[in-house]
Amino acid sequence: MNPEELLGRATIIAVGCDHYEHLKTLSNVREDLDRFKQIMCGSKYSVYKESQYWQRYDISSTELRELIQKYLFERSADQDILVLFFSGHGTAIGRDDFGFCMKDAILHPEENVVLPTSVVKLSEIIGTIRIKDVSLILIVDSCYSGLISNAVEISFEDMSGEMSSSLVASSGNLFGLITSCTDLQQTKDIGVIS
Image (cartoon, rainbow, N blue to C red; front, side):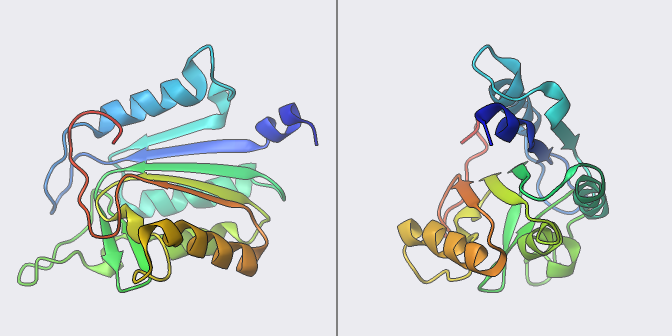
């Protein structure tokens, strides 16, 4: 497959959330989405077409699940590439999963912990796109995004390799990961893609 054909097989889904019903409001996610779109398909150096770029802002968990399903039904085919960018709150789900907090994420009032049933788990997204032979490039700008691995006790440098190896072993797909911090860090809401 030549490079133009490969680029044509990519879809970029960019999702961000500033405003939450139960979590602290963020302030610069809309700008992060705008900058990411500029990088991916809006500059003279961009290699993707605007028609390949899907963007959603301040959506619910159900709407994110529906967006991933829409991608799977309407766009994806074997050997396609999904670039998934997320900017917003994120949370650890146990020791081996990550939750994307959308506007309807719920915080337990006594424990001050996000309820796992109120977020979209990374494992859900991966399980859904594994139906097709889709390669995933995941770019996450949120607190604790370094947790995106199935073994949080290994070093940050090993996390990406561990996650990538387990995904390739389970699905045969390529996997890329860029996070804004380690598993124990919070990302500062400072107005630029961290």
